[in-house]
Image (cartoon, rainbow, N blue to C red; front, side, top):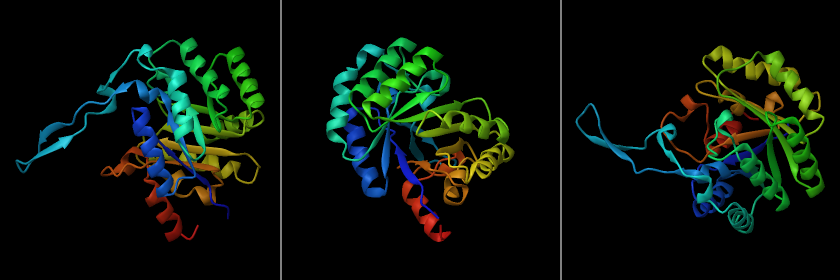
Length: 265
């Protein structure tokens, strides 16, 4: 069976750190990396010391929901895109996620779209275009990306829950006609939610669509681990070695490749 493309989503919050992380991701086995440009507006805090039950203290990073977000003027988008383009040696998915889909971009929708346009103009390998974008702007971005030779991902991120598998599969079929790949990511509140992702992938397998299906929270990693048998085209992984990372539905890139070897995928 064909092995899915592995994309490592970069967690860094500065251009320099993203470039370094991309190099490490490539070494760890990533085929492609995702630049979450909206993360450049995050201000990463210092770890806080937390006392454990045994009386020892441990350095803990506050959750990202508590990190401060800088003003849109804090980043020179054009210069940052150019630096990333010059410094990262493997293919890139460019993403600028809005707050409504779990991202951190602090400006207006018009400002966010302008950053996507600049990324397209730079001829980035892949561009992630949310299907929640206003229709006329969505079509314009799609056309610009095609003219620039950028591969297109149509994406949707449900930060509230998980629809049923039939609706997920229908979304992929509808959006496949005008994209190179369709990405759907939801929030799993139970293992039943996580199974909706798996069931949708099973329904779609063999139909010729390029898709990436996943969820966050416990069980969200099932579709990532079993992607080769589910027909998933691209799997999003991480470099994080955080304890119990599977509780977030994530998987480390090296652990993912090891799992595929162990399962003889």
